[in-house]
Length: 412
Image (tube, rainbow, N blue to C red; front, top):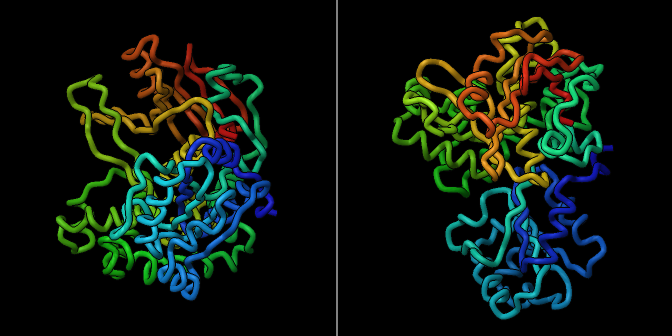
């Protein structure tokens, strides 16, 4: 069952507790933050305070010091601390008095370190961003895709999978929320509807820019319909009838509760016509499909181009998840210039080496799929680690030196 699935961040989180006074576990509602916190303190003396309970919240507000210092030799887990942002000031003062590692685990379903009335805990806390269940976690794969490539190269001859396009569509439809994944198709839809409704009326109302539910729904629906598309505020404003000056605030609010991800543009000055727009996607594929009234069955007859944006955002999310526990640190971008040359995903290692990834829902690899990757290879020289087209084919393929086609399942 999904609730027993080990989380890739568990080892990293334990290391953080051994070195830092506070670990902040942040992520969307129902991503598994409380479960991860319990995993991290399983073999440590600990106490848990849940601020979603209004009675507990009132008691903490009345006497914050008594709560914060109730377990001097262990770890205090404070769930949903964004419900009482002023508590962060007490936690800050407590840490300044005693900087022992592992004192606090704070979880939050919105960006708690930006909460009004709170404190950033800069220099006192370290972030641990938790996303929904990744396919790597579900399959028990410990090494990240990037770790494996850097250590062993691309083993394309032995890279095969039984998964085909229909199987990937099922993966997209199930999404990454542990609770939703356990449900039948018929029950998953109402769960997602209720999840979004409660987020809109409750959580978003508590973050800056999140007070207008109707407008937020319009913006979110448009982003869902344009998965992995460039974030063009003027276009969103025109389609929604909302002032362009307000679009940024609504996007920030949706990001604050982890509903959407932004993929920043990579602008290394390889040409003089590089664009600087981010790409936006809903963070969970099942939620995106629900907003678009899509199912695996309804998507099955579509061409690869019709499925590609959903698959692309899924790949981005998988690599974002794996980045949380990867030994090789990396940053993710996309590349595009005004002439239309683009690469879906740029993986930049800390030493400057670059991996380029294209995502195609096609079951065959074609020369045009490698156009942007060839450009990167020619432009970057030795910095270019390799280029990969991820598709729905069952077998790996070498197109040219340092250029390969692999199944999407190679990610895990």
